[in-house]
Image (cartoon, rainbow, N blue to C red; front, side, top):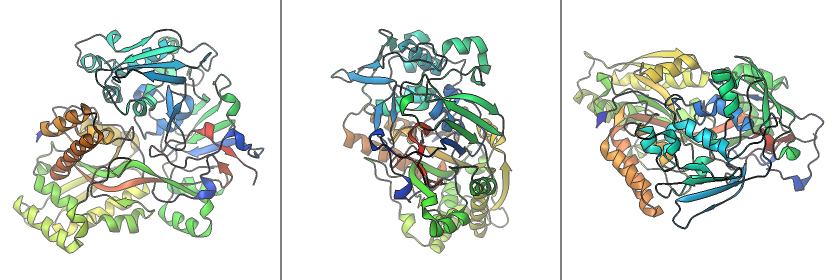
Length: 545
């Protein structure tokens, strides 16, 4: 294993949202044919967890606070419905060549931007080229590279011009995409937020200010009308949206509340109808007394602690393994996070076509694991006379703090001295981006439902690689997988790659995420199966009590 030459870590986010409950009364998907009885109130207030760092689709990664807003403001060629299935969106239909290398997307007729101007295939060409533009420094550039679009890799390496990207407007309504290799999950990739069109005229006119209210031109079911930093973002129904006739929520507000207590109080006061998360104590109380106020689904993500492998104390794999095996994940998920999460002994959760790796450690009791970890640390040169000293960084959250305190206590019998470093979200992101940490609370989310969406973050030069991990053998396995059309063979390569990560331990998986929220019992249309966790306001409505 070698270290990556430069830190270019992910800006990701999702605080512990939780797994397991599928509360039937609150997750019924709706269709227009059901003709629901609507409430007179059709305004929604959502807890958003934190302040979005941007509303530019090229600057957002999956799970960020900004993505919650962008789901409503922008729409791509295709999207995921409440069942997690790919459905037509801005594209009415598509076709592909027999070899899977050429795709044509046929846009819906008379698409418009929120300002009423026509939207065409060239707007997608501009937006996708912009993702690779070095001037943008987009954290989602790697996502576009994963699509296998012709010349993308060479453009990203600086060998070719942006206009050679294999995306072209054959007409106003036909977008042609040429791939270098077949990508079985291509539609899942382009359903993600960075692949939405953006308005070139607004960007040229306003520069970096183009995402401000009154300047932001979008194409989703809603348009931005107000943004008071650190207080609220407001959007209202976009009359120019192609399916506006079926949009029911008139106005949506997003509140950047990091405090679970503050969010709960505003929920109880009726000011919030959909929270971002739920405090453990309140979750347990509400689940027992009024379960219809709890809604949740599994997520394609893992809560973890990332090692900074540039720090000399953490370059010995025995140290990393000792720290990893000493964490009692079952205790953490049952007593600390406590909302039905699955303890994680592997980086990837189970997903369609891929079963999570098993670990012998999961079957051992805590004293056995502790004894093994003590031996490993001693072999690495640490003891009571020379203790291992760590700083654990996490972003402000009651849940993160509780978990960090519990983990530090689990490491104490090893003689490890842990200093906790609590940082506000933006400062925490800067610290991780610059490599200014030893061990950081972090997260691994899939932008699309496929193992590569999570494994790619550990490649040597991946923009989302925050640990500094670099193993050419690992990268080679992922490259083989990307070139393999046989699903079974590809899965086997992914399993080998993940096992390498678990052997070398650049990060400690703690649990696999859920999302768990407090919800107004009259709110309908929430997803019933969607590992990405996206909740589109256009699908929601309030019924009569």
